[in-house]
Image (cartoon, rainbow over all chains, first blue to last red; front, side):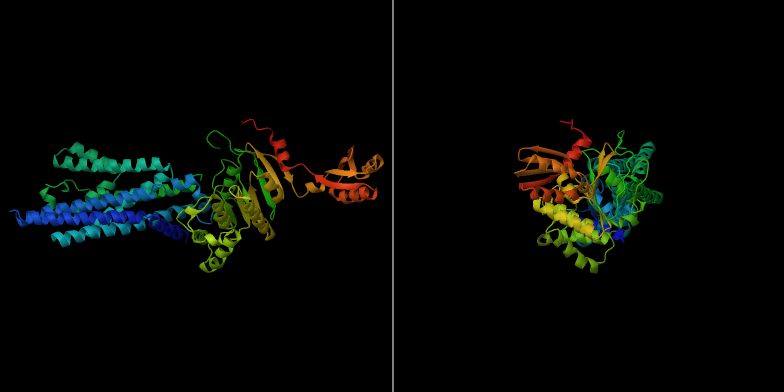
Amino acid sequence: MGVWIMTGVTFREAARRKILWAALLAGGTFLALFATGMHFQAKDLARTNLPPFIRYQLQSSVLQVGFYAADVLAVLLAILTSVDTLSGEIASGTIHSIATKPISRWQILLGKWLGFASMLVVYVALMFAGVGIVGRVVAGIVTPRIFLGGALVYLECLLVLTMTVMCGTYFSTLTNGVIVVGLHGLAFIGGWIEQIAALTNSPRLVTVGVVSSLLMPSEALWHRASFEMQSSFARTLQFTPFAIASAPSKAMIGYAVAYLGIALAIAIHRFRERDL
Amino acid sequence: MYGKKVAVRNLSLSVRRGEIFGFLGPNGAGKSTSIKMLLGLVKPTEGQALVLGAPSGSVEIRRKIGFLPEDFRFYPWLTASELLKLHGRLCGLSAFCLADRVPALLELVGLTAHRGKRLSEFSKGMLQRIGLAQALIHEPELIFLDEPTSGLDPMGRRAVRDVIRAQRERGATVFLNSHLLSEVEITCDQVVFIKQGEVVGSHDLRTQSRGETRVIVLASKLSDETAAGLTRWCTSVDKQGDRLTISAKSREALPEVHRYLAASGADIYSFTPERPSLEELFLKIMGEDRGL
């Protein structure tokens, strides 16, 4: 029961503090601009002599840009909404009147985590549906395996959320933000290094990318999502920034799930044991 | 321990059920840390605390405890009513129960007119009041109040005092941490003094009035013989003109002394029992503040 009360209050916090609405407004603005851009691109491409399947692939790669933007917005939302949820409440003393109620600390933490997770599932679903509808209506592109892609991006958001919550049990809000953004930045750089290294046949550089993905597997999940949402033909072309030269394996997805579970367990343990 | 500093050491407290217990000490004495340990917010490196007969911090014990933290803060986007409902639900109260309980508590702390206002619009005093209400939402057996009147005006302090006494009337125990010694003096039954994490003294405010009592009498037509006759009830008598300073053996002797003086033909203008204030006692036990 305590878990659901905390889930409800956390979700309500996101709505009351207008965080969710601001993120949806930003997402809506992006979708409007993206739809306009795709519309004009479709018109411009129609005037060229390019074969239809090349035009289709070009527009598909632009659609990947849309999905990637949705992914970045969702990851930012995951970090910004949860970065001060524990550290901030511990610093201000807000947590004292909650933690002295007959509710276990693991219930507080898990309830908050579920509250943010519920908010993120709404956001990722709306953004992916938005980009998918724009692609379908404006350019006539049907995104393959969009649900799987969306689920992988949601998993990425949960991973970043969990790391933010976990670091919030150890560090102050500012330090927590720096660490989590730094970790995701590491994953971002590592993920792209891996792709570029695979394109240029540099196995040792690929290893560097894989290692960085093991340290923080968030961006690897995006690359897998992008891989899933492209046709097999587009995957082989490898002439767009989102062509996946080295798709993270299914084992990497399993690793990310285990990583998330361990981070959540550490967060719960640390929050139970620490002084407030 | 906080780093290398010992926050609390050899702290042994025993609080009787149904009393208002004052916990006094200078800044940094370890009062808040002690309260946090009793509430399970901080784990002691050694030793144990029993609260209501069970180890502190357990969920079961927390069902019976209310807590008002010092400088109460909560989600500023909640309204006063929503805050109380949230805390009530965390305490396991049903919506049916809260429908009566929340308005009653808002009335008790004088915030009925502000029930729909968000906490971000509340003054410090209003936050203290709503904080007190959340501590009482589940009618706890034991209530910890950390500086409950620090942000309040005189009317607010009186209201809080009345609320605290009402809690004692219903059988609850109140553990009060306050710097306002005058408030403690008129509210508490027993006080304990803590310094550098250790108990350095205690005082029973209910029994002190039954001990030796110093009285200042202003009276004319008071003869030396009459003054000398007071030794039947007094351990010391000092007459300086119309001013008589006596130490009565007990408070119960005072009506006899008054009758004796009136019967002797003295015109009594004032008869004022005095006792050392809690502040005097506090300074005596704690010593001088060498911090400034």
